[in-house]
Amino acid sequence: MMLRYQREKQAAEDVAVENGEPVQYTPFVNKVNENLRNGTTNPFRGMDKEWKDEKTRLKEIKDDGGDVKQAILSQGVREDMNDQEVVATVYGNENAIRKASTFMVQRPQRAVDQMQRVKSLNRNRKLQTAVDDFCMIQLFDRYKVEYKQAVDTSNMTDQPVQHTDFVKEMNARFKESGLSTNQKIKKNDTMLVRSGRVSIASKFEGMEEFKTYKIQLLQANEAFRKVNVPQEGIVAPGPQVRVAAPANPKTILEVFTTYAE
Image 1 (cartoon, rainbow, N blue to C red):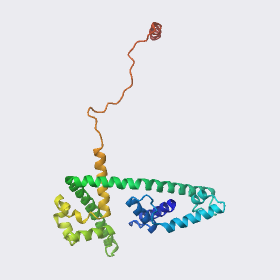
Image 2 (cartoon, rainbow, N blue to C red; image 1 turned 60 degrees about the vertical axis):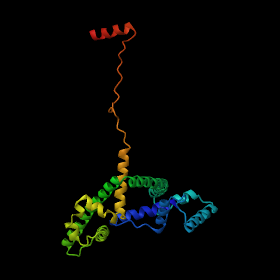
Image 3 (tube, rainbow, N blue to C red; image 1 turned 30 degrees about the horizontal axis):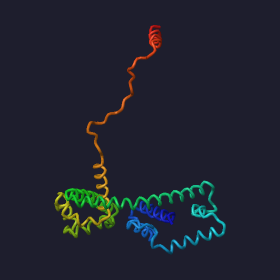
Image 4 (cartoon, rainbow, N blue to C red; image 1 turned 90 degrees about the horizontal axis):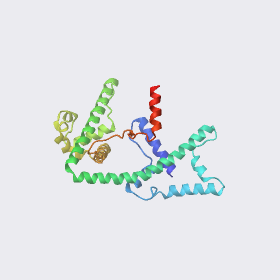
């Protein structure tokens, strides 16, 4: 189950990067991610059919005298593969299981950490305002770049402007904020001053990009607060210097004799 999760998750992310589109996970991966977000003990909860199918498959292999571990790790191996390709496939499966296991352990803890940061943010109104303003600046900078790219592409190809999903969502939220046209967005001072950006931030905080910027900034703020600066400065240890004279007079004589020669 972990191997399937990691392979489907990685495949979806690779396709998204290649096509420059949002990640579209399979229902299987989405269900596991939902369980992880909810902090369930079993990440495969509610997936009885998949669990039963895999359990039945492995039981049949074991009953036939096969090696269950080998059957799991050799998934994807074909008869036309050479030895190096087989080894690479098996290693890839091992690594996928390891990555999935690590992710499933760390993900719930990250969720707990995020909740702690959100609580600290709610208690500090000044910090919340600064974070909202930062997120709005990041969103607007990206919006302007992607908007211009679409217009430039349209001018070069004589094709209608094709905006990205990000720009479309930003336009929809601008409209909710009263900035119904692109001209208003560009000419209006709302996005040019902090008070204006903060006043409409609530319309954008539901965007995944907004949440990502917010968490990143809170993580950086938390890390900065945890840094303990030494009060007296940092003193680098130097080499120890021996100041005691040799105890044996004969040693002193040998030293002087050597220099005299």
